[in-house]
Length: 248
Ligand SMILES: C[S@@+](CC[C@H](N)C(=O)[O-])C[C@H]1O[C@@H](n2cnc3c(N)ncnc32)[C@H](O)[C@@H]1O
Image (tube, rainbow, N blue to C red; front, side):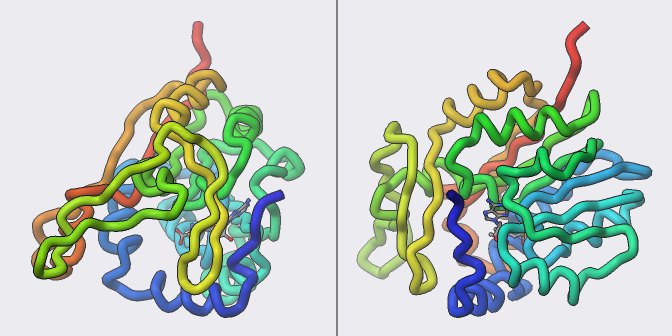
C-alpha cells in the first residue's frame, strides 16, 4: 500500500512552500531537463502520474495536447490542481498510479515527475504503463537518483572545514527496497532501486530506452543559485525517456 504523505497537512504546507519557490531544484534543474525531452504533444492524449499541482498538465494543453488526465494519490494535490490549473481538456482524478489500468483509456504519452520512487512494485507499474500506451507511445519520467535513494538512513553530505559540501557518502546501494527517511519533519517512505534494477525493469517490460539524463546545473543557473553546484557531486534526479516500440 503506497504512502500518501502529501495529505499530511504539515508536510503538504512545507512541501508547497519549497516547491513554489522560483529557485527550487525542480524549477531550476529538473523541470528544464524534463521539458527538453518532451516529444511533440500536438493532438496527443496524455497521462501525468503524480501530477501534484497540475502545472505540467496545463503546459501540455498549451503545447497542443487534446486531453490530459492528471492523477495523484493525494486529495490535497488534486484540490490544488483543480484550483490552480483548471482547463476543460484536463481531468484531475485522485488515483494511485498502481491502478492506472482502471482508467480504461489509452495514451500517446505518459509522464511522471519525481513520483515513481514512491512505488514498491516498479515492474508491475511498468507493465500497466506499457498496456495503456498506444504503439510508439512515449514514457518520460524522473525519479530520485539511485545515489540519493540508496542510504538506509537517508542521503547526507561530507563537508570541508568551512562547511562546504564536498562529497556525498553512498551506502546500501545494492540493497534494493523500502526506505523510511525523515524529511520536512515527517518520515517519508520511498523505494530504492539501483541503476541496473531500473534499466532492467524497463527492458524486461519491453520498453526501448531512448535517453537517460542526469540533469546538471547550467552555468547561468550557477551564477544565480550557486548552491546548485552541489548537483555536480551527486545528481538529485535521474530522467528516463522510453518508448513502446513494437518490433517488426
Ligand atoms: C514530489 S511530488 C511531484 C509533483 C509534481 N509531479 C511536480 O513535479 O511538481 C510527488 C507527487 O506524487 C504523488 N504520489 C506519490 N505516490 C503516488 C502514487 N502511488 N500514485 C499517484 N501519485 C502519487 C504525491 O502525492 C505528490 O503529489
